[in-house]
Length: 388
Image (cartoon, rainbow, N blue to C red):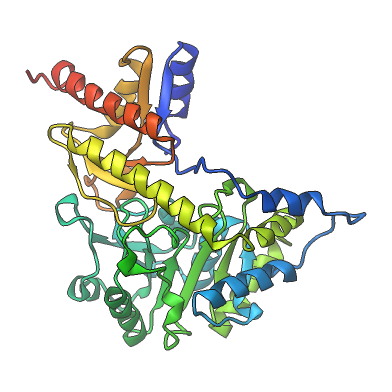
């Protein structure tokens, strides 16, 4: 997502305006409760926090999950420096060299980093735009299980696809993990952004018969539009895993004290905050999908969650296309950035003509960005692909 930054900076220096659809950085205002809590901090010394997390934040997370119908002890929660550290610590605690993790692709590219850091191997469950990137198929999942399989890792709702699992699909995947004695790592940081009411607010923690298998990854970044706070958590009731995770938490000492204080206050926001945020992202999703469907040759399904859409473009290579958009294309001094699709896949050659678009901009900018994308595709096909 960040590899084209130098080209983007050069384009800006040449006077181009870039419409950024490449990074999942929400633009909605962070709730004032965060800043109020930090301003109210009046300790004379800014000290280390406890390695597992500050009690005020652990209690806030516990209360939040109780509203979802998930009963947790505060010992089931370990606070981390964002969801990224939560994923890294989980992989380091669960995986040994050459052990395997089943992950539906396309997936968040940093999963590769975290799994490989632990010496693990990714067994990709391949999906495609033609099938709407749906992966909840028992036979396809079980086919990938080997003697070396240690875990299944999913994102629900999905990044980059926006796929949301139904309750029956969640139950099926939970059963596979339980039956095969596998860890089930569920990245649920986009939980509140499900646009079809039939899904409710999905949480794998509602299944109380998989306590020894389940690991939930969570974060305040997307839920509260507070990516810069760098506060996440790992939730598991597996006592052995808790002890391994705690060692990593102790080795990095603690998560930033002020960030934890602010994050605890975020969990006090009114339910109307969630409703308003979801309504805004639903409107943006509809705007982007409608615009993409007007571009000849684009294949796109309407995502049911998160704030991303994955689409296939009628170009030969979206990596090359993105470079061209920054170096050679503009329309009235404007161009557009997206995230090329190939890095979201483990399978070689996949995703070369796909993109991920993050709809985290205002309506008028999204409309213009998709218009620029359409104009760019038309010119690229003529100038670079030799089509009339």
